[in-house]
Picture (tube, rainbow, N blue to C red):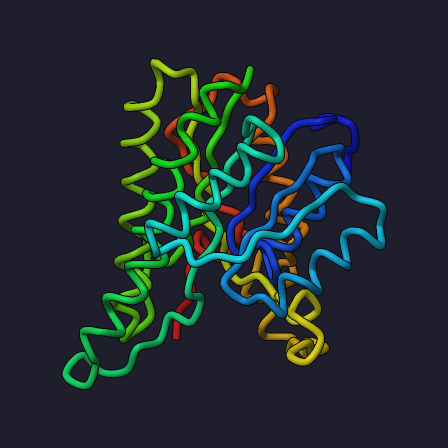
Length: 260
């Protein structure tokens, strides 16, 4: 992956301690950025920070829940104290399990919690990061949505609704923040295998069947590095004419017709 493009830029990755978030944090760090990780899981956050520091990357970890307004405000105050500005905000934190059970069995508290993290969280982060982003020369916000914003398996109400809302929030923020020169885009991942990118006690070696691989036109399941590559591009000056858009990164899975 290319390095140097983000030299001395400050990049905040929410939900950056595991999975796709950790993959993006590592990629931004390898490209020269000063990475700020935030995550509600402090154990995972400490492990992730050590993982990046072992690679001689510049990073700090600040624990926090993106759905809690006072914690987001405190997070941005700490970024201000440490760096004085923010070049890139990556809204990645989310409750990843899309399955909520049958509609009549679903607790509204579960629905509300998923929306609070997956949709309210990015909105709060954008709001409180705004003063810091305004100080950057080429500021950008990247929202991590999902192909489930456009298609669903049964009983994925809250997750699909939250990611669909985040897609809409992306173009709304892009238009609203244009006077501040802040570009806002989204990546919609498909099936991304995060087993090797979990904290140590939850890490596992993935086993994918031939069918798992062949339902992707590219012939494999995705990896965090696939999302990281797209993130590096969309948040860079090379994408300076792109805002309010989403990029589907799913190995072609959502364009392949499947007959049963």
